[in-house]
Image (cartoon, rainbow, N blue to C red; front, side, top):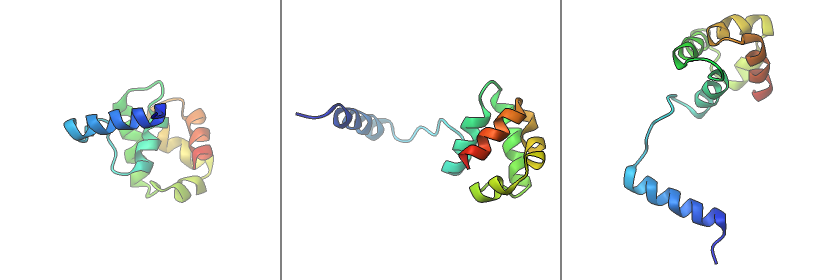
Length: 95
């Protein structure tokens, strides 16, 4: 008898085989996708894109480099995403 996990993985694989990758969540790397997921809370995606662009422009789209920033340096980078103080803490905890 298959476990629930095995059944779900089988269903997922069938859907993936039929429809292929959907590319529904933008991002070039898994880290960028995770950062986007944190920043998108309670804001529009266009504002998240601005914040991610700021992080990229600062050369900090890397867990170690992002974590090395002081909060005073990180907050302005993600300001377009709103709730920048809370999100800065969450990003630091994530990295």
